[in-house]
View (tube, rainbow, N blue to C red):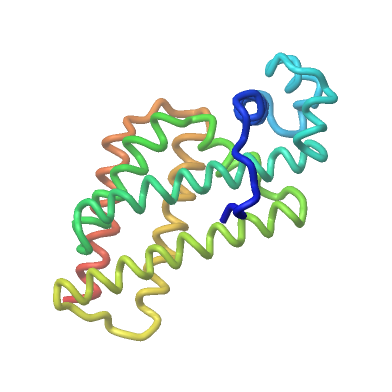
Length: 216
């Protein structure tokens, strides 16, 4: 909250603030493209600065090092991921239909529209530093919590129950694991040119069928 004595920003201050944010995003986008195409370890700060059309010093002004840059990038991508999936679930209502449509959004929109972000999320941040591993762990916890909440609300609204207290947790973890495997096998291996819609339909049908069979 602004204090009573705090003066509003001048136009020049607002412009400088906007330019800093634009440089920050430009550097992130350059790093995303290079990490996804060349690999995190093969990419240098010099390359990122060159692609972003800024100096190396400017990159270090915004980020402590390459690892810090990857962590910021991972956090932004994981936020986008959760926002897209969560918005679709809310749009279609708290039901299994909402969970199904959220799955389709993952394949039809996130995977197809953001291949570089997909590579960062599922490949370039795996097995890196302890700090990055902790960020990945926290993201997985949030996604599992999102799925658990979605399943609980669907159960309440549709009047079905799960066979054991652990069922919801098992289903949520299984969904994350299956999507991880599908992305690694079909989308990041380089051996396939997959039909994302067909893959999404198969994966989501399999998962929704499994959930229904447990609840019947």
